[in-house]
Length: 400
Image (cartoon, rainbow, N blue to C red; front, side, top):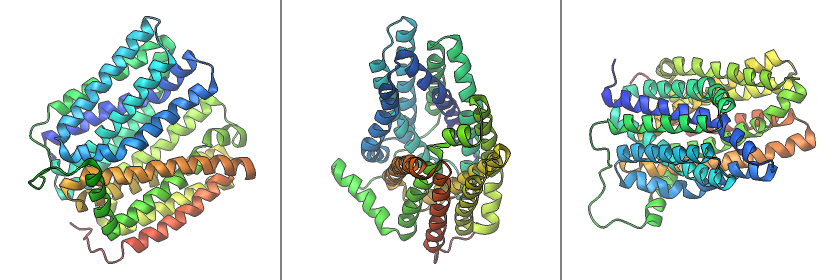
């Protein structure tokens, strides 16, 4: 069943944007190391990018609820494009600098936060309730292909040709995304109560308060935050585990990551039908158990083949969990609050990633490189128990 022209334009815009993200995954670190050999400056790029997103994610959620979400989507992507084209011109002209890279990369992070939130908030307006799982799974599959299979190797190849080339390609990808979003028809501004607008702070509090009062979504927010910690503990040191424990070289490590993404593609193909058969409670909880099993298997092995299979199962779990939780949230959150609730949940996720990275490094240093996988596995079991408890009493029918 077709989900309509607007959905296809949203999907195409997301695909183009994800392709730009995939190229940046390799190209931005390579550019940083070409501009400076200072490890602190290189590492600080990601730290500043993450910190800026963390600080601004809540107010951005307010603007997603105040403004037309389609407008936010195309404007955010076209500004990203202009920033990257300007950076590419600076690099091509020999005037590129670490400071310019910091400014552009940080602004791109802020715009990415606005675009991602807008896309999540607008999707329920484009497809019927029965199509949400299918739509989320298609978008997830496209993101995996662009982020993991196409973008990164192309980014490396383009950078080897000319430093400015992958930056220009990223700019072109975001421009294409902006044009797809601009071509969507209709007004996608949430209907708000009449009267004077509340302050930014008041609206942030309103969104967080609504989430705090909703038992299921409040619990899933906690589960998502804990799952982010469980994910980042092992993945923050995965490259060291791969090279020192599994004995892989850099090329083989890239193959390991690409092979693991196949699990995500499988997940995107089965998640909609699986949800119809077993429902959201079993799907969400079962995916967390699957994540625990995959990390525990990785903890036990020093075989690259077993680790690759286990990591593919892990990415399978991640797609099942993310699609399930996203669809539940999109069904339950009122349109006028979607941006703010999404932003609070994103805050939980960003905090979890930061905490998980710190714990992963500490556990690996003190106890060994395999221990973060064990810690993540155990935390996923806690998440599964919390998830099952959270869904108790929720009566959504898996056949609907």
